[in-house]
Image 1: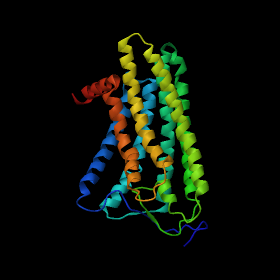
Image 2 (image 1 turned 30 degrees about the vertical axis):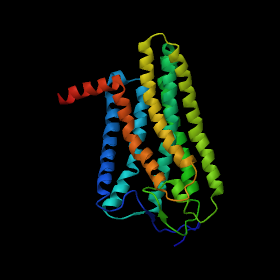
Image 3 (image 1 turned 90 degrees about the horizontal axis):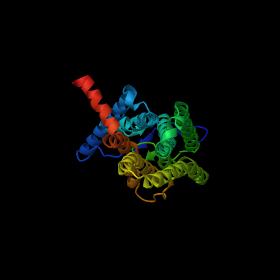
Image 4 (image 1 turned 120 degrees about the horizontal axis):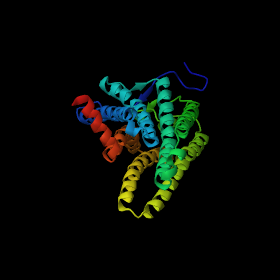
Length: 310
């Protein structure tokens, strides 16, 4: 049966990240371990921020939202990939494919704006510490997080809708381990020039503008830190901001490679590796980066462990 847009109801085929061989069993097991660690790490971060009164601050509220975005991001990808690997199948329904694209673009877009909000929080904390309670009120935090979710949702809905507006009437094999819009559009049997231009416009709005605002915030922070007379204050500011910059660099670097880099004419294996980094590895690195380099989070973890396990 063929739909009005020429897309059949037949499932797509995901060629996957690993082959069903003994050689790939170890990296597959490592991905599962990373997935479990990511869920546990982000869940623990959310619990600590919720239960510890010393973490009831705008900075940690935004951090909890980052963890809340990272959990469904990795959960959208790994369970389906693991099920296909263990059952030695590679199919995914058009509905499942659409859901993956929508959730990934929604969560990715939301995270772009949330990272910008977090950079503004750091800017206020360093450059306007006395006015911090006023400039970073609870109302503003809720507005920034809800706006991040809303803009991400609109972005995901628009791009997922545009992706499935094309007819897919030839090859159904997606050279990827999940449904990612650029990989799927390569299979369309129609001119995708307008769509590619639309993707670049979306990337400018969803990636470059938030990234520019984030870098502007840190430029002002750097100028303020260099003017500080206290070496201890400088060290604390650099330590806090370097953690966030590491997260920003990991996230933006990989996602811009996929959506704004040159189109691959040969093997798409490099694209798959980069996609694995921002969908699987980055969500597990975020809680580690913030917990290892943050004295308040480590203190909250120690108090929580003493209360429940000692």
